[in-house]
Length: 519
Image (tube, rainbow, N blue to C red):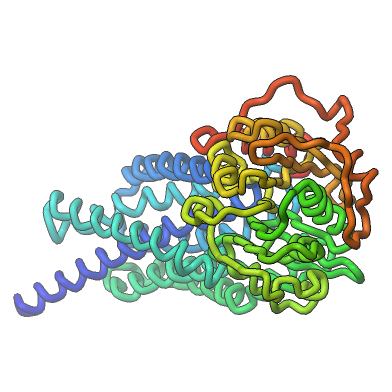
């Protein structure tokens, strides 16, 4: 071979190897993001899930780097083998977590999750030292180190950019996991093909057969992912799934039984059509019956339109502004025939304005004053949601009320998540509401469910209600009894929730784990 041809070959070899570490770094971070996100969906408490994932992943990478010293010969072959194995474990990680979630408790799920993280971390830790030693014949250590690490970090950066903005909303966790498993395996096969002259025929065949088998399985999983997810959803939920969607913010599931439409967000039930009226009537008509004015109403959350249905029963209402983070919920509320029937097409009423925005940001940026603000937000399963029950959030709601305005919020279960419920009330008090009042009602799908209501610069009386709109459940006597709490629901002292210290999340998780409702 001529000197020019030899230089060209060396340059091409280096390009292939450096490109490999870029793709490998990309895939490894994608796997960690997938595992953290899936765990957050299933277990809640996203900070804990991401912290555990990062910590165990970094430690496992250190173990992998240490173990790389045990490999003395055929380093390129071992690098290719690591890539194929990493593709297998990483690509299967989310399907494995989906499977075990249906059969194990919280501790069991965390064991499998962390095991996957450690295995992926060890394999990732093996990659860089092996590749650097392979490249010793091309460049000195300082150049190899800068080339390999810079490409690995750039791959990680790209992963963090495309995952939340492109991969998750378009493909979801399951398909993304399988797809990048295929990418990792393809990387191994390409290296196997390009460097075939450096490998023995037997080893090439073994690696090729292994990669081909895994690739075929993954391709089949990717091709049938919709069917697999449908089967998994139907096995997890009591009734058949009629709508399944992964957005940038959450996993949306609608199930339909004979007469029962249910909405789940990230696996947590939001309503059941059999008894949702008990919840929505309580959150709307008790606060509005105490409001001196009911012209301009703000709804935070509630994008499915059931709260709006109840609000529009009050003839004095002129405008209803609904703020929801996810435009997909609005789309469901205005297009899905079964949900349209349930919300009585309230979201299409000309008095209703839909705003796609984070509730906290909306209160910060919008200076309009409202007669009544109703918060129909998800339970505080993550830090981002817990901040919507914080002292700072309640201060913002107070600023957006007219002087005599009313604020009310759903507040989890005073029975199952007892301390979380009272924490919300205490947070409202330190947020500026001098006398927030708790009330609760029994919703069979949820159990005993709680709310808090308060007025801006005046006290409210838990008596003398006048429920004068058509309802299925409420009357004046039930309204008054809603403010009575049994002795075993009371607590002596409780801390309030802040953005900086989201104690509410700890209270909430503690409560549901105690009752076994959260794995």
